[in-house]
Amino acid sequence: MLPYFISLLVLGIPLCWAEWTMGRYGGRHGFNSAPGIYSVVWRHKLARYLGAFALLIPLVIYMYYVVIEAWCLGYAVSYLTGDMMLGSEPEKYTEHYRNFVGATKDGFLTDGGNNQLIVVLALVIVVNFICIYRGLSAGIERFCKVAMPLMAICAVCVLVRVLTLDGILSGLAKMWNPNAEELWDPATWLAASGQIFFSLSVGFGIIINYSSYLKKDDDVALSGLTASSVNEFFEVGFGGMITLPAAFIFLGVAATTQGTFGLGFIALPNVFAAMPGGQFFGFLWFFMLFLAAITSSLSMLQPVIAFFEEGLGMKRHASVAFLGLISALGTLIVVYFSKNTVALDTFDFWVGTLFIFLLALIQAVLYGWALGIERGYDELHRGAQLRIPRFVQWMLKYVTPVYLLAIFGGFVYSSGRSELEKLAKGGVPLLSVAFILVIFAFLLLLVHIAGKKWDREGRFDKLPK
Amino acid sequence: MLNAAYLTALVAQAAPAGEVVMTPAGWAIMIVSLASVLLLNVFCFYRVLSLPPEAAEGHLKAPLEIDTGDLSDPD
Image (cartoon, rainbow over all chains, first blue to last red; front, side):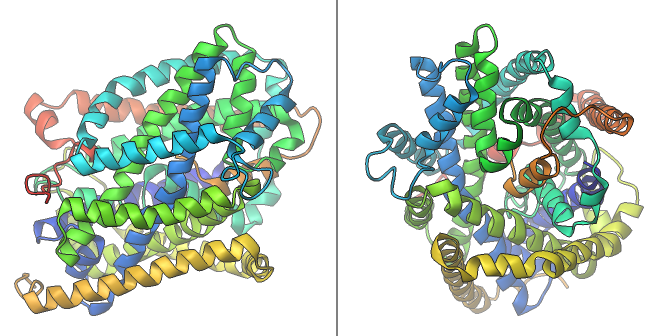
């Protein structure tokens, strides 16, 4: 937890402010997509190509996130029909999870292993694209204003049950007792900062896009901090006190073998089985999780849509259709290569951790050195409802990039070789990374075309120096 | 949102089997962590809820509520 909180203070919150600020600054100068915004912040031709990272990350994460979203809805349906009430043996929930997601073999789902998930996945993808096609996102956000407090109440009920389980102190100890040896492993620091970026959506390419639509005097300081704090409350207060202690209690050392996304889908059904009204709480929990997930997946689509519209001159409906086709390819890979969720985990490691880390580094350098901390400070405080101490600017210019570089260098030194060896063995991990690189090359090409178009139109000539 | 690598790291570092007791350091980290996120939330909510209505109404936005400006002529 120590690397986690240091990452929150040194990386998460400052970078969140930097991203909101740069996005609003780019939007004020007529750009909504990351390649355009980076080009406004740093008047160099290379800047637009760096923006390809901010398109790749939300696109690839969407490809597997929508599958997890379908797991949530599928579990909610199973609770509703009573299929999830499997008794008190933890092994049954593990077996159910593995069969549900097709973890037993590749092609399990396409061979008819779990038709329910295929139907639910198709439904989830269709709902996502209808919402983004028709612009219903705001309606979902408003609905979640009611649904999320309901989920918080549900989480409190689950928390009470987890804290009254036999062996809870042992579960909490495994979660919270510090382990000094791990502090020397750069992979722990990389993973902790990756978690911060993931939970605050920093380094995703999403905030930079959405903030570009803000008015010039909309607050970004207090909004950014409040969003971060609520995220942290749910993650530390509920994630740290419910899912992981419960996983340790019910699964013991087997928790290490179930894949990380699987933990919540195995540990929590055990908790629901051990509490009164478990079927109701199980349904409510996974349905709320589905709603929360859909707000995230919808927000992942907008950055790429904005780029297609702004860079390639497409209209919204055409860009949604084009994006639907590209994202379906990645989702098919995740669904087909389901054995031990290797494709999903590979996408998540390379894009959901490493590339996010790289984009965060790029954005820290752009803010601190290209936009400049004096201009950044003024921009951040335009319309701000909160004064941010000036040392945060110095931190963004010097401490944050050095911290990110040190962790990344340490990780490459200690684990880079083993990660490459995993790929050298071929198979699904290599195929997954190759797919990511093909998509990245495709996006770079589109950015190049968009850049030429902007140059022809003289978009950057009109900008103030 | 969850991040797989971080969960893996947490689970792996806590892997030793058998009964483990909370150490004083474990209690301290848990209490300080929970208290600090709670305090940060109280501070933020106090600031948001004490804003004048016009400031809170027009200037605080959730991403999906933001108008992307491309819905009026989508075809």
